[in-house]
Each structure stands twice: as structure tokens, then as C-alpha cells.
Amino acid sequence: MKPKKTATNAVAPTQPNPEAPVSDLRELILSARQTVARGVNATLVLLYWKVGQRIRQDVLREKRAEYGEEILQTLSAKLGLEFGRGFAQRNLASMVQFAEAFPDENSERDLATTT
Image (spheres, rainbow, N blue to C red):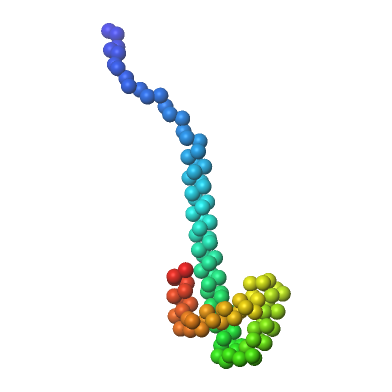
């Protein structure tokens, strides 16, 4: 007996989309970059708060006056040599204001979780 022929609706195998792996990898890379950026931003926020808090408490001793401006100028000059423009006098003053705006000891934890 001859084998019976059956009708097949076989579909030719499709070629894999060469762009699919590139697209997937692109999404992985972009997601990782975004995660890193969030981590860096959170770390910088904490750093700026700690710098402002330290200057406010240990250097200025909670005082504001011309004395404070002189101190910030000196700190800025020294930090600027090693770390660049990010620690200019104006930036240090902003960090102090930031620490004044969030003086609570829980501020550090709160800032870390909201960034």
C-alpha cells in the first residue's frame, strides 16, 4: 500500500529579524544608563547635603556674616584646585542653603529615597 498523501499547510520558516537583537540590546543599555544616572544623581544630592551640613555646623558654626563669605571663599579655592568648578563659592553657598532647608537628621535618608 502506498502511504496516503495528506494536505499540509506547511509555512516556510521565517527568517529571524536581524534588528530584534539590536533593539533588545539597545533597551538593555538604555535602561542600565538610566539606572546609573539615577544612582549618580542620588549620590550627588547626598554629597551636596553633607557638604552643606558640614560647612554649616563645623565651619560656620551656625553663624552667618562676612566671616562666612570669607570661609566659603577659602574653602572654594582649596576644593576648586582639586575638584574643579563644582565647588565654587556660589555652589558652596547653595549647599549650605540646601542643608539649612533640610536640617533634620532624617533629611539624608529622605533625600536618598526621593531622588
